[in-house]
Length: 603
Image 1: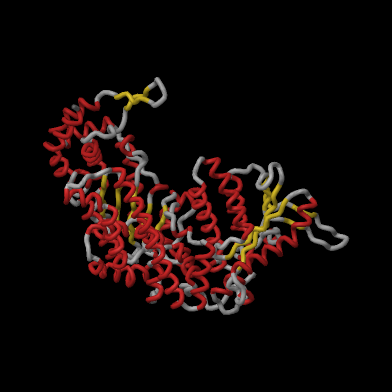
Image 2 (image 1 turned 90 degrees about the vertical axis):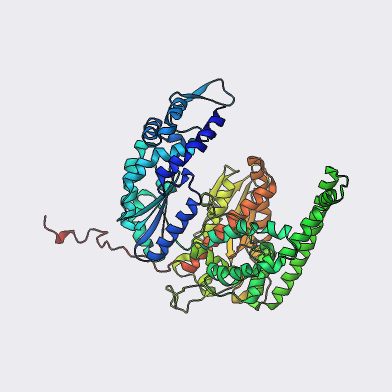
């Protein structure tokens, strides 16, 4: 009964809130209001970008449950009188919240009730005075949708607006969270934004985010038009303008450069076949329609001809058709892949074939979630694509800052000056240790296998990790990592598998005898700079996945996908360190480390 009354009041008096809020709070029911806000903020940013201008996107902590109910009811009494009596009668008491599995309950004293048809309108009216107190048309432009707020202004004014919001918001039950707040600026204004917001933990985001754009298109947007492809016959040519936008605007923006025709065909293939997983909408339209028509044939026959319809038969037909069409599509894509590979240059073909055989595409199939370390900066993402497709790097120096030689992709991966190659190794070592620590307690960093012998001049033999219980219970497994550049000139005539196998054998010759003397086992963890795992490394990763799946009570395939992605991102960041890191050590400006200058100062 309460929901019915609430809906009736929302229908009868909701327009009052829309009139009250106008464009200041767009959750009041203003039709297409949020679209207008997107247009306005985008145009403000485009008109002022590069001039110390930015957009601040704010989210609040548990906003609907934290709303100051007493202040909200007072504001509703003043701002929304036609509905205020009902809301007061509804919220003046404390509702009991029952805890599942417990005989106890707690009282709801703040916020609005979940599922209440009037809750959004009440929230909008309650925050109207807060929004009005923040309005300053001469210094910034702001817009709100419920608890999500945005402000566009020069960067110092953004900080002023945010500080005002943090000071005034709690009185209304609005608590901004700096850690969930993002300021979007142009590339040239990033330093200014970091200086202005770095002390409170606000994340600074540049306007260019190719990884996020790619994830949005590959994971969501391309499926928006698939329904039309399934229900409309002979509709493929209508998607030609969309294909042109993808090939001529989207891909050049993501890669930061022009794309050849062969690369356009390659990128339309699945990631497991070396592509980017954004399918050609023109070619896929006919496949989608024929598949849908075959799957629903029994439904069509029942509707048109009044034929008998059996649900079990229909379900079996759908499964059978989907399996058959999936096999046909996979075969067609494999043939397309073979055709595209022939048209590529030798270096690009070798890189793509390595990605296919080594199954190194996991990092392209996951969402860029920061808490899992799956998010890459625009430079890291484009460098990873350059490595995957052997494309030239963007904005590189003319000469190496470590040795002075001409800078190139290959030189950056191999130059040992400055210790970046060692740091690349350590990055992979640490990522491997973090994964092992999920399921094994006794994980030791850099265990000493064999002590140094001063009499013979033999150095100490040190592995990278010791993990107890990997292969046998209570038995230590020692691991040593090696990151190999399989495109190095010395490996040009050898296959990737041969290079990795040779590196594994070299590690075993160095460590196995000494490790076995200590009654342990040795496993070399050899990986290429683009993520291809050696034979022994694959077995180790599978073993880790088995144990993690048992602990987390997840399927092996689900855990394997996550582990592969986690390791892939660690390897990509380690490789990017060699490409973009400095090989010159920073010198301290402090010149009195030993106190030698003290006598020159008066006592």
